[in-house]
Length: 293
Image (tube, rainbow, N blue to C red; front, side, top):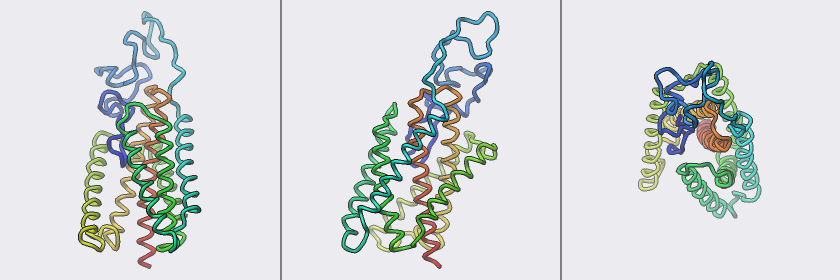
């Protein structure tokens, strides 16, 4: 399956350029009837090896793989990646103050870090294999940007909003995970298409708003403040929640299909991207709400 989040080109676990998770669920007794086992399971390598549960007369068993991805691998890599984001965010908050004497320098460093993080994320998105050093470097630069922006918002716009945004992001993550585990959220091809279309429209509107604000001054089309800002903030958080569901499906399929252990870095990368998206939208929404008080 190919999952998605703010970096739309990020490769999923499927090697067939399709949506393996949508074609057929992995079967305990072998591939689904009437399907190509290599389209269903992108990690099937031996066409003559029997599937789990095969009966008498099957060919010799293939050696059991010990380098497959597990949920523990995903949790560990995600903790490392998010830990890097949090550590560098805290350090940048402390070492790059946003007071009147240093705000220009701090903003410059934050913007530069954001651009570097964007470039690194795009490079990883187009690579066929995950590169842990590249992913951790992205997390470090992203943390610098988040630390300065969070400090500025907390200092000049809405004191205390950062803790609220962090708690809100954690609540969204826990809520989507619970709903996904309970199968209240079902990731289907239609769900995937809807999320992709909605996200593309959302980003295009945000880009248009930015261009209008740069060349026309003010708040552009008004998507970043007032009533429209609140609506678009909620939409952004909902999209982030949908991205989380896609990421959970990607992890579930990867474990079920026996993805290589290194693919857990891709899962960590995707989850980090999504959580950063949700945090930024949550921070913006809460800032608007407090500013309207």
